[in-house]
View 1 (cartoon, one colour):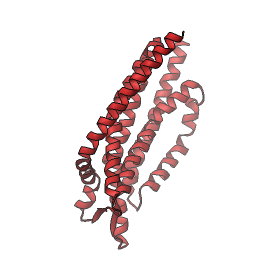
View 2 (cartoon, helix red, strand yellow):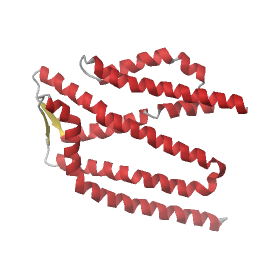
View 3 (cartoon, helix red, strand yellow):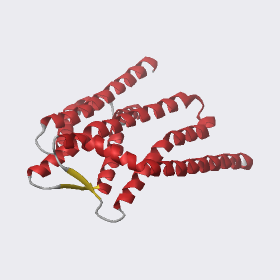
View 4 (cartoon, helix red, strand yellow):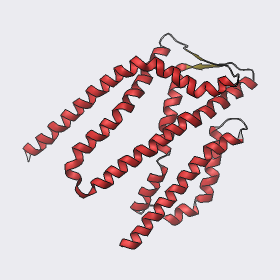
Length: 244
């Protein structure tokens, strides 16, 4: 028993050391390309507003602010590159004890990655563009210069991508609660009207100004995710009825 425990601990130690070495290597790589990535982020997110003649300047308000922004970019790149390796090492370590549930675990990991990536891409290429443009217009209309802290800008981009990526896991969370018997299909359907109103209010808060199109563009994906959660839960209920 002790030998088996020692073997598992030793295997875990090797995998952790491997991940730490990869993290450090990816961090150096991220630092090397951070300047290029920062320019790309600025062009992707602020390009639309700048193209409309709205002046937005990213500034470094302190001597170390740009360096801190570079470090944040490098850290984000490192974590993104490390994430698939982390999942693989975790799955490989747990593989002997999973048994019949191996397919369920693989499917859950795949779907989690898929929905999270969709949320991140949606945030980066749509939500942040709309939000940045709306905020810049709002300031310009009130004769306020758009001098944005580069550190705050980078933090906003990464935090938004992460948070909305998590929100895109809503269908999977609904499916989990349905499978666990915590919430049922009838409850999801009854809450639909309240959810629709809440989503549009939420989209209105996130989209400054009076741009109705922006609010719709933000609200529609959230509504679709909720409906997808209902559909997945309905499929689960049918399977339960068929197979008891």
